[in-house]
Length: 68
Image (tube, rainbow, N blue to C red; front, side):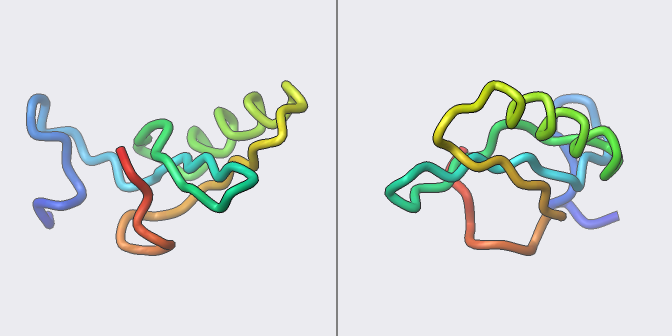
């Protein structure tokens, strides 16, 4: 298990991220999840709110380095 894929306080493996990207291209981590399906469900729920932001699911180590 790689250290970058775990939460330090519980030791749970949470490799899937939900990322919010705003109109300016700024990216922020919304949350970390154990499965892709769980992360996608959260992202879909946030997308349903019809905000201008885009929510996407990425695996740790992929994507553009979202801020936490």
